[in-house]
Length: 67
Image (spheres, rainbow, N blue to C red):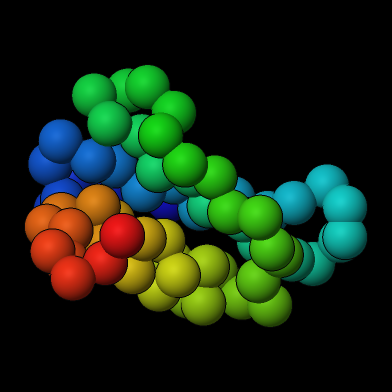
């Protein structure tokens, strides 16, 4: 599964080898790996939702109050 809605980012969701039946995601920027999920997700939809949140964090400017 891939999506170009977040150009220049793309989201790839794929089944994991271990544990079986779980899914993981990868975010690429211009084809280069930017971030990968660190947790297995129960469904493809949940994995995609998690990846979407990660991309939105990348778009959001940093909070100036945060150090």
